[in-house]
Image 1: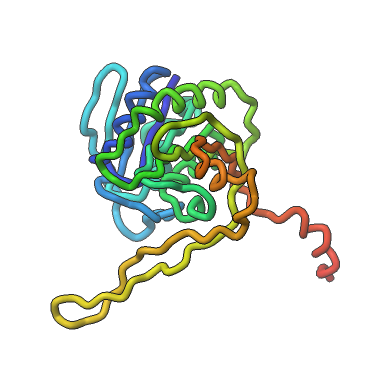
Image 2: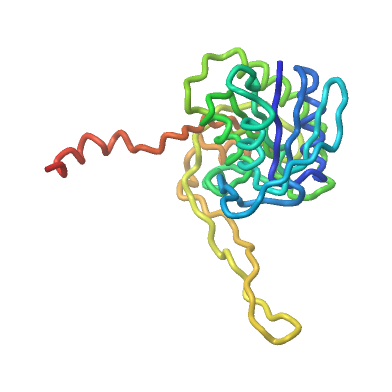
Length: 251
């Protein structure tokens, strides 16, 4: 089995090294990671600057490249230059992200943007995140679940256009729950500050505000109860419920 890995925290982040170690239990791993942090890049691509790809390490079970692009760039470039149509990866795995990508964060996440890029190419893709932003975060309690979940998802018949968003809370885990994405938004997003020259600038902060605090079937609800959440995510953003109603607009 061939597995392609990237992240949005950069090549030096511990999470991607943990994920690469886990995935080597399933097959050969190729890591193509950004050369530095790229959080919040979603599916952004580099279009007006050169991309560079440098091999950093190679062993029988692991090949590591560093790229100066976004997480989606890393997957897109790897599929174009390191693979071909007759030799695609069996799995794209992204993360482990330092910080949650639950709820609306999925649309901003570079981790999930990269997973969606793999999904676009028809490759089974899973994004993994831990609800801990610290670089020294402990992933050990999550590792066995990642391996177990990956094996189970690999055994499924997954339709084209669907990938998976997996998030783990901090602390003791109670188990795994399949969930839907929680509705909500970020508030208090920017903090106004002053630099040493007396000029104003703005620093992104924010907190998540759930729009359905009473719901018990969302990723946020289960994470708050100590469960790992698995959300199937579709790249087709068509609103099929509204589509039929909108036929009246046609002329």
